[in-house]
Length: 114
Length: 109
Image (tube, rainbow over the protein chains, first blue to last red):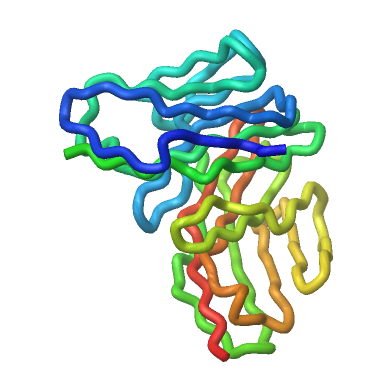
């Protein structure tokens, strides 16, 4: 059981470039989440998904897009990268929040936009 | 906007002492409450969760919830240097989780 895996671990982007952060979980969790964590701050929810084909915005969705075509995968797309998107990105998964809400986090992707 | 507030610290306690971490939240509809530990450069890991008013104990950790006061706390007994980390309070409302900014704890040997 690998849990939640994220790739890449580190990435440097130039302003205006695009990239996709990959997230995969092998626990058959319905719920998946993308967070960003700025230095000295808590986690802010970007997008979440309650199952394949269903996604919804979190607190800070601007500049990002997601898709959920399978239960296992939940990629996060950055279009037209900006310095404000420099952050550490965590993917997480869980069962239904009402049925055992523990979130399992991936190791994170550290993104720098220059 | 749903808010979760924590004292950012840093909080320093001597080894063997009790560390007390506090958190308040703004949404009375919040359903469940979590404490995560995060070591520098690592992802958060769950320590405790609590749904109901009162205390919940797990080993050296005790979570306390008071929904009337919208307050949740974490007590760490017999603090160890390995407990030195940032502790994140999180609140679940519907399908979303809201995190505080974290309290930095240092346990001094």
